[in-house]
Length: 127
Image (cartoon, rainbow, N blue to C red; front, side, top):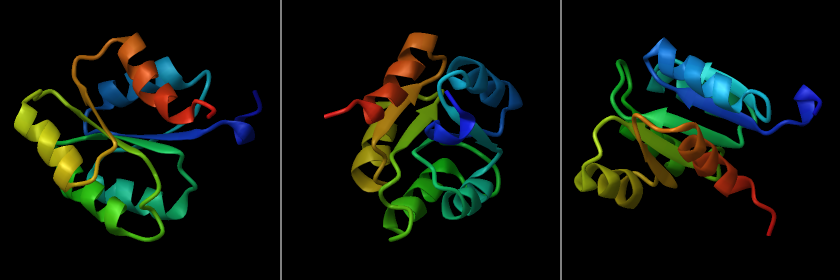
């Protein structure tokens, strides 16, 4: 598939290894963009036509929850699905991410290739 026709996935994580892993798993089927913190993610959400954002919760500068909330309350970016990714799988974090901050999904690290693909592919299934 031509790179320009691929859906754009933004992976936001302060760990380069996580970004590299996501790129390796999804890069064949999606155009994978990277941001290392929430502030960079906010800029990219406003300047690129993104199809989905995979966002770590705990990061420097702007954390993932705050960035998710800003994305979901901004008219220009609110339609972009955001899946929170975290090493902390507490139900309270999941509830906070989805019910209060507006996240569309939640994935706990470490995740398998299948779990990641499923979390992303879910948003692109044809109705």
